[in-house]
Image (cartoon, rainbow, N blue to C red; front, side, top):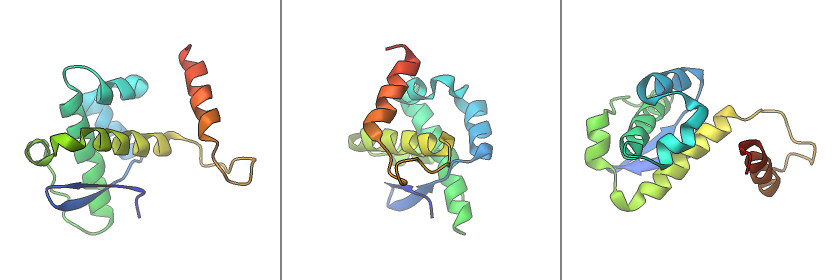
Length: 126
């Protein structure tokens, strides 16, 4: 079961992120070196988010044996504007989990979110 599930238009849509979805998202919205900006900022952030949810959602639906029939048009017609932040968090969470190493942390399997955020900021030059 996928970890991130969004509810859109009365449907529970699990977000699946593998190499296939990575390739599809890069082709649809751009390279992922600035993925956060593509989803959080700019004139196309809503369409980019809808496209990312469509791609990951169709993969998640297919994996659980449900119709993978999401389209960008359906997404834009059914996304709830009040839930934009929740959708962004789910997309970025699926992306982050999908791109992180699956090695167990040395501290017994617990993630240190503060340390991860500090490392991310350090890498970004902040």
